[in-house]
Image (tube, rainbow over all chains, first blue to last red):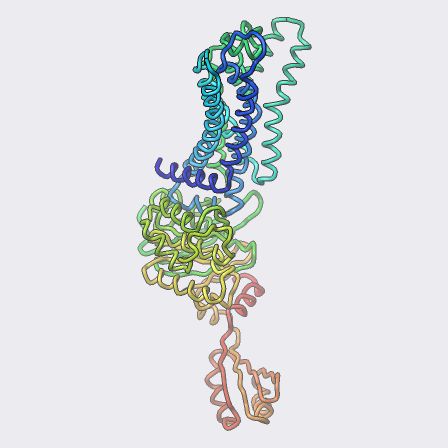
Length: 275
Length: 309
């Protein structure tokens, strides 16, 4: 454990120096603050408080930005170390390959979590201090923050799997962008297409439900924008909330599986890989 | 498994294949503790593969390999801290300083923090320790890599092309450092391309070609086995050169690159006889005389061209 933490610390220190942390934090803070400033001035009668409004805005943004940041952090995690020769060196140290991979993963997770917490924290603080009466439930916001970290971990884990499978960092970058496009963008086009095509028949509906629960990005969306709370009302998903009755715990479980399985696969493949 | 007494590395018929590519053919190699060995060979001769096998980074396809009597996985788990390694090409994280990098490797190896400062001084990076590594020259990076390899108290030092990028002054210091480590009991395996540089630096030399161990022995052993002639270089007063060639040109191969310079080749066991004869027949004309045994370059070319050992 101590050695895993040492690897994680080195990763964080490097992240701080090469301005990755600064860049990622600035991007997220900028987006979150713009949404907080613009999004908390809704016009018209609304059944929700400021926390619910900002939760929906941030969650809608996070489904694109957080996976992309996570993949950019992790796509060359192993490949770049191999290219630099430092991987070969680390593996001659009293360390297992599992410790190396988990340590780096942990370091990258801390970097990403720090960026998310700073950005979303700044937005929350702005709302608290700028809105005179804050009504609504901050637990929704807290749940969104937690699930955003989990979403980040999912894509870090996928990035690690890529970095173990694809040896060249340049190819891994293309694969990472492809993966992001597929899961965060095109997957929903596919589902939209299916919704348009199906004629309200039961099998089609079930298929769409299953597909929505198979993609971690959509699971995140259902978790934060669906349900029956105020957020669903704001997000416009209140209409479909009856359709979805999956418990929040199960949704988080699906996301946790999306962290664990690719990470486990990355470890197994890394342990077998010739260096 | 008990250690074979005194052997740091014991390789028996170990071969390594990557797919259909035979990187290393069945090889035997035993290295006693405290000995130093240089691996020489062209690119692709199998030097790095052999080093990786010794380091436990890869497993032999067939045959066996023991380090301190233990198979690779066992020694990786129990004694990895006793190994110092310098990879052929290494680029440390450029945004960190030399001191930060060395400290983090020291922590991973369980070396004393005080050793970081000491080693930075030993490799001549004391004053540059707090600069970012990306501002370092190639030689400085190589020296940082070397400091890293010396962390802890390595019982086995594996150095892949350790002097590439080093300036001549630090090369000399490098071999002194390696000599110190050896006198402390460390076993040393290094690979190199620069043959003239390492010829007198290690106890034994292994010549590899296309994944096979062609020769293994001390420089002297290799000279004996090669049967290559000794070169006698004679500088004479004017006219002496012609005299020498006339006197011994029939018995020995002679060359006269300049009027007062003659080079003569003879078998090793004839050299004393030849020198006696030179002094008998042209002693008063000789100004200077050198006996030049075959260099490692010559031996390498000889063994690599001559065919199997």
